[in-house]
Image 1 (cartoon, rainbow, N blue to C red):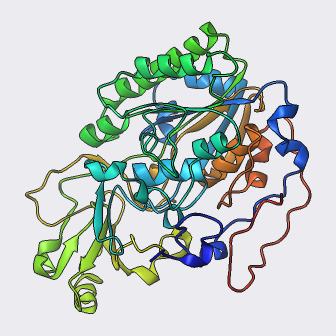
Image 2: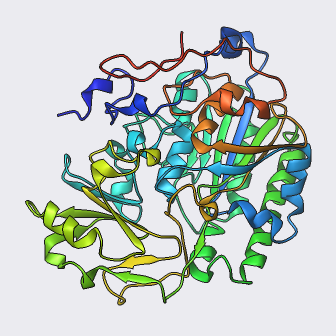
Image 3: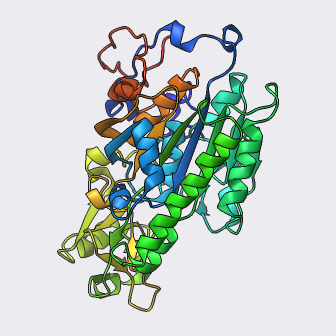
Length: 442
């Protein structure tokens, strides 16, 4: 049986009948900014780049001349509130759907779906099963349905068939494939003849996340890793210039999350508080999904709720509303959240990392970098804050693609643009009963 059928007319297998209570109003964009592509000389071009785990303050830690080049000729956002939980797959899918994790359905890197009675892991073949991804529609699918073309180099989820489509051009995920190779393929796709060239590209690189986990963000060894990311960004920019694309392609460089320093002195061992026979451990620290054995929810919660002063325990329905993390069956009945810098383990025999992410998305250590440049953006402009879900309507506007219902708002970040979009005054959110997503008028 389809889940949350109240929204089935808007998003296939959409997950939350209460979604619009937390949705931000979509601006009513004029038809001039959403005109059909046949009335344009050529399609706008956009490349979205993610350096996994690149914290907002890394660009000030060591010389980063290439990030500075983008900021001087473009824009920077100082504070980006990403989505909860601050893990890789939920946030990368939010960037390309404009939805909170509870709505797009990729609620963690490891999940259990009680309706399907199946488990998902980013380290298993379940990753490639379409049904995990189809509670939302990623931007590359929307662009292609609008007659455009997309290219994806290792972006999480981009090598999965979603709603019957892969990106027009894409690379099967292979962590050993160099950044330079990925860039060369993206450049090749953007440089193809007009009738074959991609309009929207996504590019992903695993660093500095891997080093942040292994070394910890406070390690002085991270300085060279950060400098190396800046050099890679310089390579991308130089390749765009060589191909004659640098002034044509709108370039957004961001990340999914930051990184917090951990300590082996700050470990919470669940075996001290609750018998393993009473529950299944679904996702890893710092936000742990707990699936109690049948009939044991209250007993397990009672054992955990005040177990450790450095750990918060929530029943699913009591997760703070600001997290937008209640309304999906893949969110477990009990959530444990470690305080910043603490690690939740069953016992100390498991592997330990010196850096991690996943904590409260308002923590500064969890915030990603955001810089952008190109014909759509202002020059040498600094904005104080944005939400990562606002990126989706911004990208749709740049691509002249009509957005699907989402949690973002173009009004929140339209000041980043070189010219303001023509828009009428947005209507206020007065959800009807039953509630439903706001649409962009056709």
